[in-house]
Image (cartoon, rainbow, N blue to C red):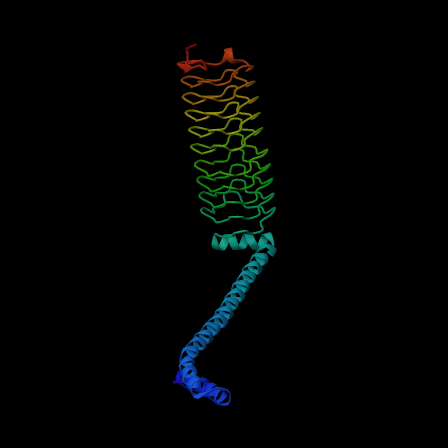
Length: 307
């Protein structure tokens, strides 16, 4: 009905104008044109309205999204502003404290917080000695200078965590995830890392004295200058790793793969290399190699050595 009225208005306006300026013949022609022009004007109006409403909807959606983002940031800021004591209460009550501020906090020894979610939490300088954090999520957490002596971290997620200068002496990290973690100057004395994938990780200069490293994957890892003395590296993969100047004295490397490994200037004092694969390994300049134990050992040149 609206469209019909609109057409009639347009036609009437044209006729009134033409009566003053043109002949009857031209009026008949222009009447026909009015029927063509009016739908075009109508379509133009529809598109104009559609564009206007679409623009308004997009603007409203953007405003809603901005409000949601601001609300999320505010909540995160409030969480960060909480004191370590308040964050600790939340952890103990809920088992979750994502991105919490727990800097310098001290947890009771033998405290049981298995499966706790501490992703992105600030645990810098925290004392977590002897705490049970089995299967805990510590992904991206800040553990700089943290005390993790004797801590149970079996199957915990430490991917991307910053463990710089942390003390993990006697800690149990069996099956832990450490991909992308920062382990600069970490103390791993007598730590248990059984079955852990440490491929490509930078362990340069790290102290692993007496560590249990059975079936550990060190493929392509950097262990340059690391202290691996008295370690148990049974059936581990060190292929392609860099162990220049590392200390392997008194270590047990039976059935391990050291092919293509850089072993220059490594100390092999009484190292057990039984059934070890040293194919294409670089061993020139190594120390005390004659004092190592060989049995069915594959040497760099492919020969088998027994002694």
